[in-house]
Each structure stands twice: as structure tokens, then as C-alpha cells.
Amino acid sequence: MTDESTAVLEAEPVAAAQLFGDRIDVARSFANELARRGEELGLIGPLELPRLWTRHILNSALLAPLLEAGGHVGDVGSGAGLPGLVLAIARPDVRFTLIEPMERRVDWLTSEAERLGLENVAVVRARAEDVADSVVVDQVTARAVSALSKLIPITVPLVRSGGQLLLMKGARVEDEMEKARKVILRKRLSDVEVLELGVGVVDETTRVFRATVD
Image 1: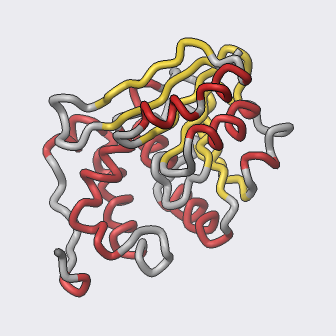
Image 2: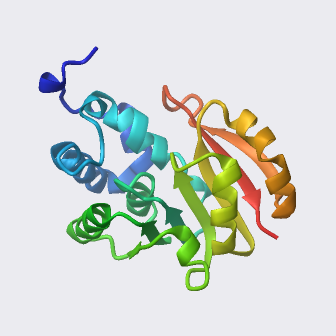
């Protein structure tokens, strides 16, 4: 077990430069600032530093190629900016609305977007359920928010007809899908699939529940 008092930021993995390309310096700046202030602000736990790149930043960045060029993405429960800020760094051609209800996290997201020069980011302090009438996006993302049975009903109303859900899940995503089967049918989702991203690129792959909204 890592000693909390000696935990240090994980060395940048080789795959980082591959995933971020010419945006790698911005990603490094975000990683360093999250490592410096994340525990203090309650964004990450002290034991996350030795795996910050692998488990969180690269894990989020793997989603970037699935985003529509020139599109508008809503990130629900953005928290520390995972995946919202990471994706905004990787895809400056995509517009992001980060939806987060907690004030201190909203302050962090807003200040980081400004510090990093992310002009493609807007931050909204709200629950997803409360902005369905005012926020309409092409795709919605979420990471570590809740089970699919609860997450699907609060994300679908944000997405235009023909848009997509891109929900990052863990190894038990198939079990979650089975428990959410009635919700998937009721919300009339189509092209439902689970993608495993990062195979052969990173040690910890990312699983994504992808579906089209009618």
C-alpha cells in the first residue's frame, strides 16, 4: 500500500503523447495542477497520485476519438474534470458544457478552463435533471456517476434526436446493462453496444456504453 505522506505523481506514460498529440503540454499542465491541488479540494484521494495518468487522465482521453468534429458535448457530473476537461484538452474542435452541482468543483472547473485557455468549455452549476430544457447536445459523457439504470434517464433528455450517450463504465458494465434493460427499452435507445478502448495502447482499457437516442 502506498504511504499517503510519500505519494507522488505517476510518471507520464509513453501513451500520453500519442493520445494528446500537440496538446500534450496542456495535458501535462492539467495533470500537475490536479496533483497539486486535487486532494486539498476533495477532487481526488491521496492514493490516486501514483496512478493519476493511467487510471484517470489517459482513461478519459481514450474517449476523444468517439466525439463528433464540431459537435457539442455535455459532460454530466464533471467533478475534477474527468473526462470533461481532459476531452476538452484533447479535442479543441469540440464544444463542451460541463454540468456539475457542487460549488467547489464548479469553481475548480471554471478556473482550470480559464487557466488552460480552453475556450471550448462552458461550466454550468446544476444537476443534469435541472438543465434538460436549456441544454441540448450532440453527445453526452459521464464517468463514475451512477449505475446505468439511474444514469440513462438523466442523460437522455440532454441529447438531441440522433445523438449519442457515451457513458464510461467499469468491468461489470454488462451486468449494469442487464439491470437497465427495461430503461433502455423505455427510452428507445438504439445501436446499443459496449466498446473497449485502448487495447494495445494502455494497460488499463476503458469500457464505454454507447447508444443512440431516438
